[in-house]
Amino acid sequence: MRAFVRRKDGSVAIEYVVLAPLFFVMALGAIEVALINIGVTGVRAGMSDIGRDIRTGEAQCLTEVEIVEAACRYSLVPYCSSDMSVEQSVVSGGATTTVASVDGLDAGDIVVLRATYPWRVINPILEPYFADENGAVEIGANVVFRSESFDDQIC
Image (cartoon, rainbow, N blue to C red; front, side):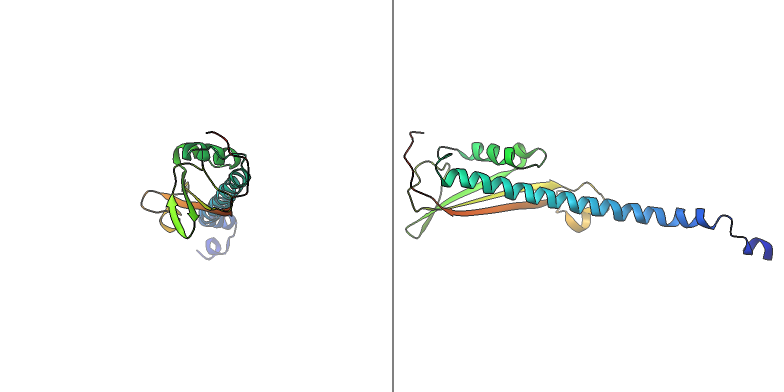
């Protein structure tokens, strides 16, 4: 019996079997967090770009659906057009109004664009810690800007 206990031939295989699942779970968790951060960065970049286009008058006739499509082109998130939602509001003279399109912005209007996107959590072990009841992490971006003076277009 003493000879069996002292032998160390299979100890590495046993250690691998015990530690490998923990390592893989940690690696998949790190990849999941990195993917979520990439999604956040993509949504922020997309909203920043579309906000710049609206602010300068390049995209002043866009509806909410067209803003979502344009923000999705700029961002790198999967299934963006069907899942992303954009809220728009204009602050003019101290009053906030929700608008369906950015048509009719006056120079100096303060425009608030808020995009939200439900990022689906891939790793089921991390889902209870990151996700909501639908299995998604709500990522989003806010863009606030004062519209500039530009020639009016007929939308």
